[in-house]
Length: 358
Image (tube, rainbow, N blue to C red):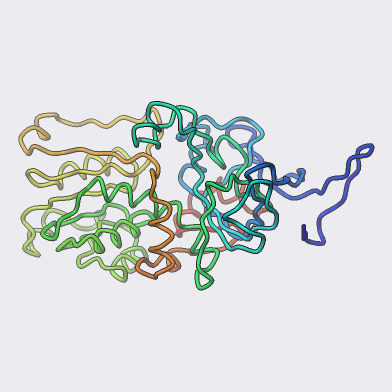
């Protein structure tokens, strides 16, 4: 297997192994860059040289001591949005070969629990999460089951391919929204997820796309990917701006921030018979103060979206075909050593999507 010059060969008795760098999670605010043993491909697995791994909101929640989709054991390497090059294949691997450019779906399903057997695999009771429950992509090499590996086009950059996992999650959310050609869609929050949601809403045929975002740079990006109207909620009355532009009824609201105040705003902006999608991930113990009567009198349909069931291939194809632009969302590519600093600094993360190159 090829490896970089900075690797050291170590010996323990008769055993020889190769050391690589990894970001290892030990608890709240405790992420350490350490030298660990490089993995070997077991039966049904491939080893991937990680070329790009995105920092996700889930990584931030884990770093802050909150549980994501599953509890992260002490000593786990984080990172579940990643792509790279296959450097080794184990016995039984038939669909993937050394040299393939790939991205991964981090959610390995058991296939036998009630939810897996009834087309609800994202609720799998025995799910293995690459980068959450087992080692993920914030390391130089990562071992992954063949079933979780998807080939990418030669024209797709590794940074773009690393975005396939968040795109796949957004596809699930958009499909739950059931967007029609006469829908007026408001997206609250135009970070990476909001920008993806705008593009998927456009692909789904929405008649009007409105972005609600306080930061000017993100509003510019939102306009570039299809938003017809961008509103600064800190300086403008959102409802008044909508009325001024002839928009009397919002039929879909997609909340992508994950804060109580923006969730309340989503319910307020939604018109009668509208669908409200709470996509942004809150801390587990956060609550919102709402009036059920307001939901009742508008007959609102409130939905949420949990990870990415069966949508990774769709995401990869959208990125490979250039039907969705994810490259412009990446504001920085950083070295692995900077990961603890970035996770600890919300001001750095607000700039946009940051990709780690191990």
